[in-house]
Length: 317
Image 1 (cartoon, rainbow, N blue to C red):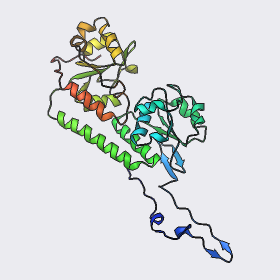
Image 2 (tube, rainbow, N blue to C red):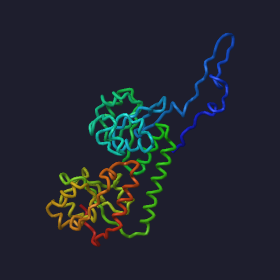
Image 3 (cartoon, one colour):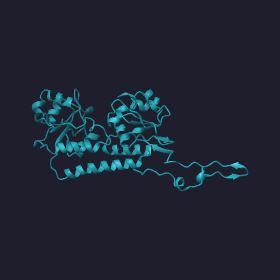
Image 4 (cartoon, rainbow, N blue to C red):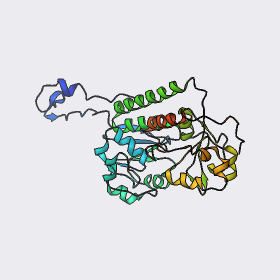
């Protein structure tokens, strides 16, 4: 949340040729070398989401991203030209697809090191193995966490601090806050709160429970997570989905087709019976905690305003 540091005033006001204000002084034939001031706040010490410190001696110029959400953050902060490696899943913005690849879900640490990075940005949980391997090297490793909306804002600001783009990060997060607040204001006096089930697949039936990033997105959009209580592994049975009978199911195109074919759902699950499936304009906008968070909230909120919840309450799974 800090503003980007400006160059020292001495670089502007000094008029002494060549040495400027740091002209060497001679005494008894000994020349005292000039004192080099800190430039742009570097070196600086950063504490990442793990509570681990890393020292950046200079502003990062060769950055590798280990997750799509981190890639989106870097590009949103104007650092796209400094990103030299991304995963095969990094497809937004489109320019990211042209960057060298360092692996997919499994990161190729050798490919990461081959880029000679001065900063690697990883995500806790998703990049466990890569983090363990890179911790054994001398590569500056910044680990982020984005398990909630607030942590998403924190991650953006942390990247800003590490890369000297604090001002850009502050502007971005302020704009994100404003857009989300606008949605909340529009939903303030609405009694409409459709029950929403996030569905990643039907074999197994993997969903999103409470105390999660997507749970917050659903709530911010004016909905109510159909899965109100934690379920083991965030997985449900076909019978549990029938008991929940959500008003809306959020799923990708392929999963929507599969959901319509699950025995009993066409008649027993309200969302399937009425064809109330929400699909964002981009399949990834909902599941990537990053700069497009407001877009996810706005699109879901617009859809939910047109849904009339069923009067009868569902049974808890």
